[in-house]
Length: 72
Image (cartoon, rainbow, N blue to C red; front, top):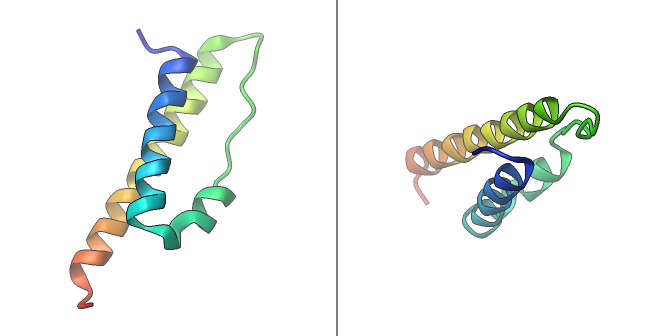
């Protein structure tokens, strides 16, 4: 079952992975907007966390593509 705890754990996993593999993205991660969860409606909180997670995944995919297309 997808709970706030579940999505928070997934978010932290991706953030830590990005911090290690793409430290140049830390400033973007720190600036990414996330809405404060709505305690009155947990479904909204879960949706917001899921959307934030998906944004991080998209950032990760973009960074991987950029890294693969640049010669180091």
